Length: 326
Ligand code: FUB
Image 1 (cartoon, helix red, strand yellow):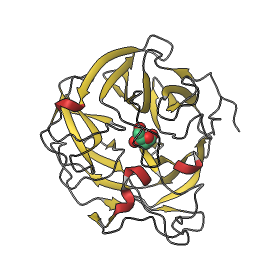
Image 2: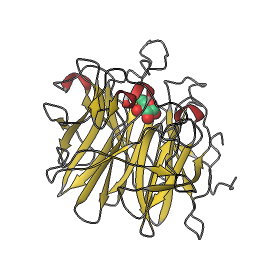
Image 3: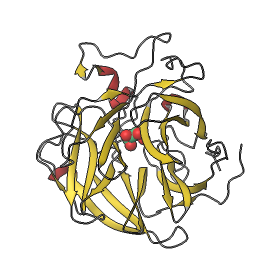
């Protein structure tokens, strides 16, 4: 385990936050998290207890300074196709407009991805009337490559419904593959020029082990579960993600945003709470890991709090491991 450079810092204590997507816009650090609430729904493997109703946006001028809560920027009741559960969002900027991408169950209880638009990074965001055509599952993470290419990474198994699809089509009986079969892959798709649609069919993002073999479904310590993130470091693409029921944030590296990616190791060991979800961002020449845990709520799975810590790269491009319970 590597010694952490500084103590992790929570971003808010006046409300519960989770699933942070951090970005630098106009020289400021913005955080787009889920907004956890006590809704009284009983905990289950489907994640029904994550019954979130709206999003807040946070920002900071400096990591040592104040964190500003910009208030409610989008509500479930304002989204025409809403069923329930506003889960982990992400945001992107293009040509001075800001796009908030979010997963939500539609009126048939199927997760789809929506997009809402604002003229400023702190919102408020106006939702498009329908979900993104061809979208499914959860946890959109949008990555800008070079000047004009934007890719969405997405997918989550169990409550995130990814096991209900093969080749982008819903299947009759959605199950995970058997342990000896290849693991389900997260998806990657290029976004259209107007940022409101998929420009192609989503592709599998394959994660290979050290022998060049795709990770197996039974490789619970390394296979993809949910919570994707993409960043670039020294010209390489770093895909990081949660292993879900083994509670780790891992990463894999590639020369292409589409992969294949080679598994490299663990960024964050298990935190207090069942879920783990993160983002990685460079701000003022330092790299930060944003993540959440359930320490402030006394371990309640559905009441999480976002925190962040500086991370380090070794000379060979590997990332130091952070102890989640620090
Ligand atoms: O916040 C609801 C879900 O929990 C997210 O979509 C997952 O990534 C997990 O953090």
